[in-house]
Image (cartoon, rainbow, N blue to C red; front, side):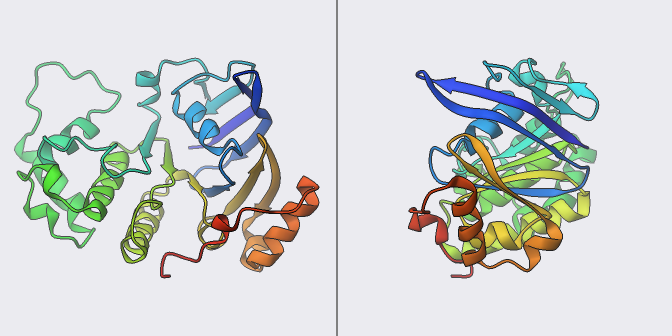
Length: 265
């Protein structure tokens, strides 16, 4: 579904974190949001997710619904999210199928119905089997027994199983080793394209931002300073992107960590 944000503004400790941030992301498109620490990208993601409202103004529209001031639990009917830490999006003491059951009921009345039915279990097996990790045969295993990469792959399935309008990826490969990060990126690409999910992916990695998705936003000091569409993005190098940033921001690019290579290492 389409996501629109208009004139988002947010302040923390009297310092502006977001200033007049606006964009529209069309249905089925994938947008990378790039920036150094403090650029405002995580705050932007948290506002779209409903973690907190844009206290100084602005609107968030998903589909045709104004969700700006909805409580976070009501936002859950619109968004799925994968966090940076594999442990954040999953409950380690619950089984794989129990975690998936909670995710499948996101945004729905829970009631007293059976959490894990035979039909639902088959749905879970089908969803997990495409990962190629074998965890579809371990539905009764506690999530805490999975590796970090397996838990992040499970988090992807959990975030998408209820078919949310918007998928939010919060630096979801940042804590993984390069090989595992590449696996998770490939799985992300497969699931997002298969489900045609409108997706925002926050990342520190320029190479990933350039090569993944249809659009790239680069943030600096709470503002969008670079906005590049798919056709232009395909022909850019990291040097081109750094140059575009420096021209737009009016200052030298200084954070070498954002120049990290693609997960393949």
